[in-house]
Length: 411
Length: 117
Image 1 (tube, rainbow over the protein chains, first blue to last red):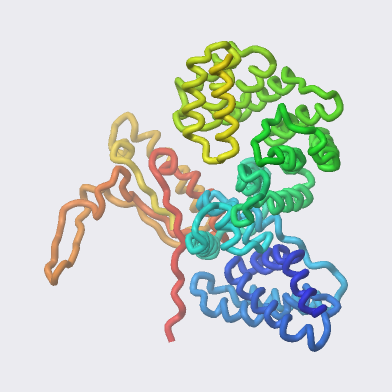
Image 2: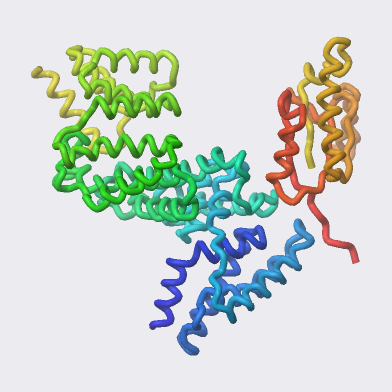
């Protein structure tokens, strides 16, 4: 029993490190995973009988070798794989006898998963799968696709890594900012899954918020010199701190401005502030630090009881100048409206509708509706609400918008 | 393998009295740097697509057709087989090629066959 628990603990805490270690040497993620699962099976068979070894990770690495050799023999792409595998075996044997820690190669694995040569739709799932050890079915449910389709996507991505010979290396300084952005964006995408299911009522569709937070923590720790990695961690912590407040007792959607501060997680806010503070010392603001700073401005309400919308709007302005995405521009307009200038907000939204594809962007129409209502243009506001409602997939948010639209009737 | 694909208008610069200088200058510099790096296994530039002839055997019949195998905007114009440690290095060499700016460079690993006994 104890040995079985030891194997489970191993999977939870060391899976990513073990896969990364093996894959960084064999350059074959799928092969590393197969070898490791073989080793875990061997552990389940022998640990209950012989006891848990003193260095379980080194034991698993040594046990993974036979499978790795088999895999290498079947591979035609890299003819020089055998000496590499031999080196791993020797290294693993040495580690089993020594006290040194085996090197942490997870950072390389993160960069591989978000490599530009990997299909963009596969990057986040691949990270969750290889670094955290999540299975395809769990990832599939979070991304709302069939498990078989997700399995296929992962298999294809791993084959590409092996057969195209993508480097297991941390990118050079010239490429690092762009490659890092891809890693962070993939983690943020994991956090975005299931965002709408704020209450986590449906376990089948619950998102990967916890897992994304774990990935962000690992990344910030591994890339201690990258302020943006800390920025992302702070951003996710701020968003997570308000999870319990995003829905009312009846599952009703509660907008940020009306949230019950008692339901915010103060320890998470405090940690987020601390992480963001450390990041800001480098004086290299990037997209994620700015987004975290916006959330920090919202969090000030905990101490002052009010939101400084002018400050929020200013931060969104800085974000838009850096990354002028449609999402950031819509949020900028919303903040300008909250700061009291509905006319300016409307002008910003008009600019967007002229140039960008916002026809089916829910946040655009919901914001436009609020802004028009604030500007006293009830008729147009009602039309915008109808459009936003039609684009909303979340029932609670839909109910919230319907209420707002109804309120216009009596205004 | 780096597969260089160019548009017709780009390829035409090779014989244009005004544009030939810059065209060949860029290619010359690229070829020289690849040679200096000592990574070339093989490679060749090709004659323009209109010199191509395509053969297909269908139902035992040999069909010979004038022109390249696929009628695409960008046409295969030459290749290098290079020996580099990983995809990332190959992508860097691909990005430096003039064809990457004016057309496309496909990068694909060579399939190494097991030795025959």
